[in-house]
Image (cartoon, rainbow, N blue to C red; front, side, top):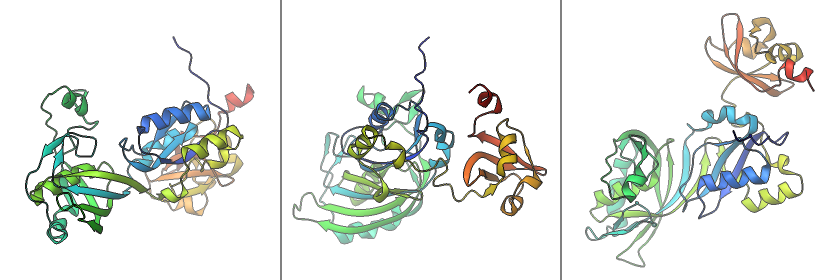
Length: 319
């Protein structure tokens, strides 16, 4: 059995990456694994290869909180091209042909109310959605007919910020969107093109935000590599619980830490005033000296740890 590569000590936290055009999100994760010497890396939502912008990565112990980063709303800058659809709903696919005369900006803006709010969206046939255990894009590439069920998504914002009809047969629309997690912007392009009667596809996509995180605070791959070479990669990492300020935090002190190291529930008296006010069953962050030691839930007797980030007393005794 292959031996698991050990983690580099201290490489734990949230890393914001400004993904370039070209590599897949998994390519980025694989490269950072090598750069950081940290095999345990998760993410808060992937991007298509042609897309750029914010990737939220969680490293080391922060991977235990990865699921909490997946549900945040995503913000994008996107460019739609009208005039024809493609097999992948973006510029990487094969042209499907012109369906009709390209629309004007006024005509498209009249359609946008249909694409705001709660809608049912069918994922692209060239997507990572699975049917009978096989990814949709694998079936599509092999020539199979792919039928995916619609699912509810929310388009919180969809605004036109620019229109370029210098090539009248292929007008471009620049837009800003905020959508719920799991929404495919290229599926929005597909459906908007159908509604306009012309076909459309996505030609650029840049994620500018995910939850509370913004791309302005992200680092390029070159910056990350340089920081690793100089021994300053830790300086780029945000705390393990970055972005989770909506989960109440309670200081439990060193006495609480001793119990958490063995996964023992904390009595109510060890919680501070904020912790004691958390509703029964509610999630809470348990802090020691302002640093997260565990994620737990409020109980009638205190707090039950669910994910512990400090070493057990047994492991500390063997150091």
